[in-house]
Image (cartoon, rainbow, N blue to C red):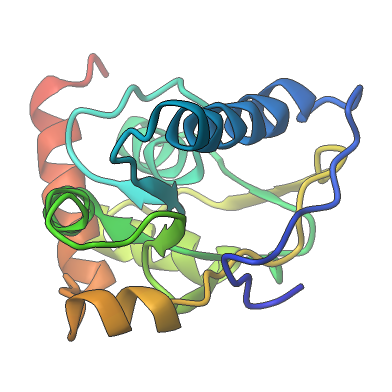
Length: 187
């Protein structure tokens, strides 16, 4: 389902290569709601979509730190598939602000947090090259099994709870992230 509303229950392969990641998130949501129902705890559930920014590990497998580290090292920038896959990226400062704001609203249940501005992965790679000043070429690699073709949250509920959602432009967020990586990364 695209974009993904909070009501989306997923389509998960419980034994696939992404199963630990997918099932851990589902378990955390189920456990949180169980504690709310059983013990009356005041709970919030944030479904956080792709977040990026300084202090990520270059080798954590996420696309933004991977591309930035590759660009800064002058390595091939790896893009899964033909580059047409999409993601939505939210800068960490906004995610933290929204998580804190979520504590102050009277809402029990899921709330999608992130950006709904979809970006093709080849466009993201081109933007990383521009921001870092790298001339490294792109290398298209096979898509990992069960990797979703599109990821974009439906932020209708978040907007109704918080009003206007903060948004750092992707170029600016990538520049800040790249600057941090350039100052800390062993090249």
